[in-house]
Amino acid sequence: MPGAAPETRSDSLVFFGASGDLARKSIFPSLYRMVKSGDLDVPVVGVAFSQWDVDDLKERARESVAASEGGIDDEEAMDRLLGLLRYVDGDYNDPSTFAVLRDELAECAAPTHYLAIPPVLFGTVVEGLRAVGLHENGRVVVEKPFGRDLASAQELDAVITQAFDQPAIFRIDHFLGKEEIMNLLYFRFANAMFEPLWNRTYIESIQVTLAEDFGVSGRGGFYESAGALRDVIQNHLFQVVALLTMDAPAYQGYGAVQSAKVNVFKAMRPLTRHDYVRGQFRGYRDEPDVAANSDVETYAAVKIHIDSWRWAGVPIYIRTGKSLAVSAGEVVVNFKRPPQALFQDALDPDQHPNRLRFRLSPVSEIGLGVRVKRPGEEFVGHEQELRLPTESPLEVEPYERLLADALRGDSALFTHEDSVEAAWRVVDAILTDHTPAIPYEPGSWGPEEAAGRLIGQDGPWLNPRVDPHPA
Image 1 (cartoon, rainbow, N blue to C red):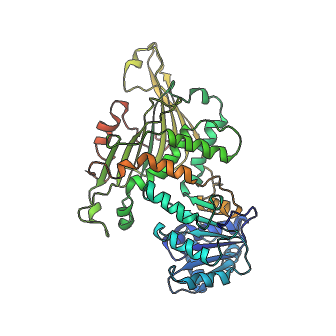
Image 2 (cartoon, rainbow, N blue to C red):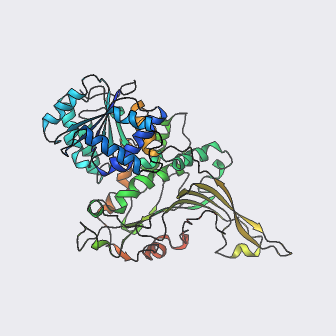
Image 3 (cartoon, rainbow, N blue to C red):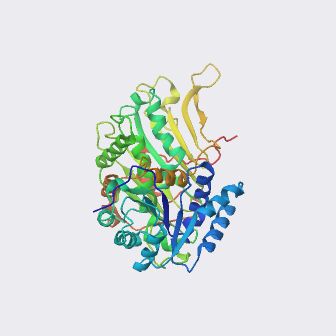
């Protein structure tokens, strides 16, 4: 019988992959902040196959927090975290590893198991937990990617649901825990002035960009198995599009939000090779663990159509890439021009009347672009942007927020299986039916074909500015 998500708070946190990079870069600093905020006071059991003991784990935890932004600014909290740590060393393929883990959790009745490990090991670990009864009254948190395509996503879900019911499965995507992503949803539905305009009658097109000015940073082996489409667009940026385009939920509650997002994915037209431009930065093939003839895309741009009453005919352009001109994330909503050109400058195709811009990174900000008349007798204007900074020192880091939610059993900011499968259906065909990756120069904005063939007359691409307040 699969384990059901308990209604009570979890009484322990087990995280597999305790010696890995994700744990070092993100998990230990997040656990430290959770201790400081009071969100973590239960045993934390690290599991890995590294010939460590608990002292090695504690040393890694201290080193990780010290190297993170802010470092160790509360020794008492650091000591409390170290006091919560336990460790189990063993091979995930060895049943005795899970027997030892069961003994370590003997006094715990409702554990949360966090799988910070490659997806290929999910099935092995879930089966190990089930074999010793650690799935009962427990939850499981799995990292993306949730499969490599629709078939593998369904297979992965079938494996996990052998031990855990859907309400006990938390598919973690740290992108959804970012404050600026949650603000997309809040801004749309907390301000009534925009909702009457938020449709095909008034919106001309939407652009979503997530650019990075660095390469694969030694993760060539991972990127060879993923690529930009799987790594960023199918999950992160599709979620952004869903928040931008979903209909108003029928009732209060995140369950209604999840249903509204699924409806967006179901209305997305499956992509074809004509909707897709792939690129690869020059020098990628020289990276460690990258094939000499690799065709993996480090840049991907797609044109989305949502065949719904609200969005029919409105193109949505999404792009992401490595080794681009800047590191920045941005959403731009282009409104249509006024129905009659009363002023001469309105005939200039480069003069756009109105845009709503959500800057996601490196700083968060909302900007509304409007046209304002220049001083003088002539009716000639220029675009000005009204800007609202949304950056705050009080922001909670994504993993801190999401792991605390998982311990509480709050699945609001996690991805549900029906959403995962619906998103894979949109991209499934172009995972194999596509043109070769086009080389592009590092520091550029990717292949020219993304501007010419893909976005065409709906362009140009609006490149994010790193400095939100240029002189």
